[in-house]
Image 1 (cartoon, one colour):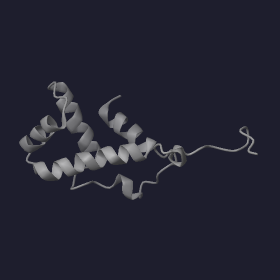
Image 2 (cartoon, one colour):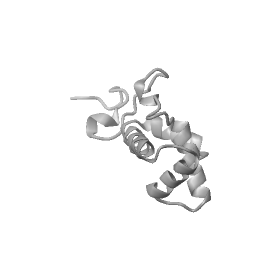
Image 3 (cartoon, helix red, strand yellow):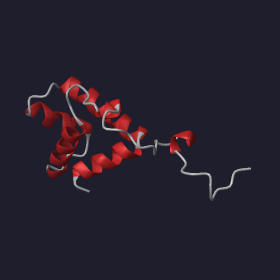
Image 4 (spheres, one colour):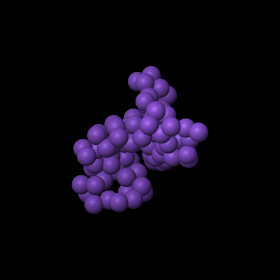
Length: 100
């Protein structure tokens, strides 16, 4: 039997949720995907929001305007969504970069 008062923190990943364990700055989860960092993704999302764009296709259009390769951008955006779903810390950092 586990005493819930002394069991320590629970990592939600053990229950199928995003991990709540801290990530070091050298953790691969922070590495850019196709050259697009989490901060780049947040900047792109902010610009899309300012333009009233609510879908990934519109975000890719903005990225193309910036000279980013649309196929590589899609892979990066999809990859960042996966990482955000894997780690609470990545999601929190994204919201900070986004300005929330």
